[in-house]
Length: 46
Picture 1 (tube, rainbow, N blue to C red):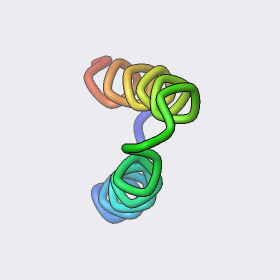
Picture 2: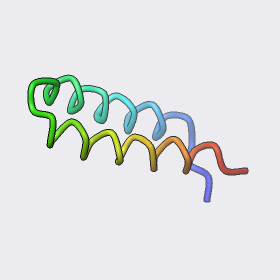
Picture 3: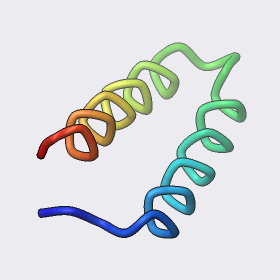
Picture 4: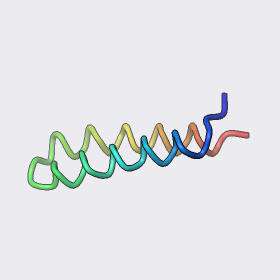
C-alpha cells in the first residue's frame, strides 16, 4: 500500500515534532523511534 507524498510529509512532520518533544524522556523517545522505523519501512516498500 502506497501513500501519497502529502500524507508522507504530514506523517513525517507529526512524528518529528513528537520525537523532538520527547528528547528528554528516553522511554517516550524510544517508542517514537520504533514508530519512525516502521513508518520508514512502510514508505520504502515498492
